[in-house]
Image (cartoon, rainbow, N blue to C red; front, side, top):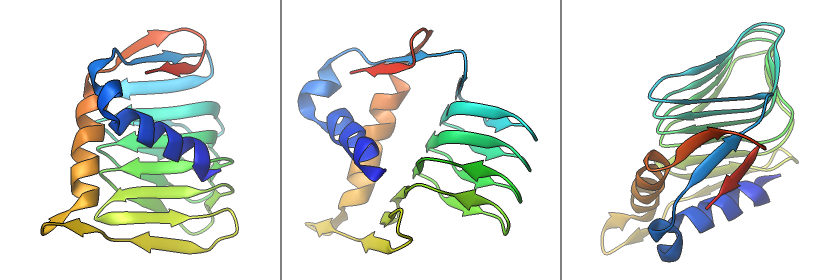
Length: 159
């Protein structure tokens, strides 16, 4: 479902949230990395894969519930599967033939691209005063994500 990702994006980009501490609490079935790619190998199953300033790469036969890359790409090789949401903020979502995203896709970079669970695409390009709004949003999101702490914990995000 796209809704949780959009809510996360709205909270992260709000002015009060920028003043607060941001913590990613990760659980035992999550993969999170900063400044490098998260790779889910063939046959592995992961709850969430999140890369800050890196790519999320799913090898053949890998399976995740959600895949999110901030300032990076989400890459699904042939036979890989995302059962929930795939989101790329500042990158692209690349799906090889034979790979599948069962849930929604959200791509923020050169405009906003959303694909719902029904397979329909929505593209959005907004400019204000000649400035691309998605570029402004992306800059704020990346700035906020870079300030977040990653802590082994209970699989939640505190903003």
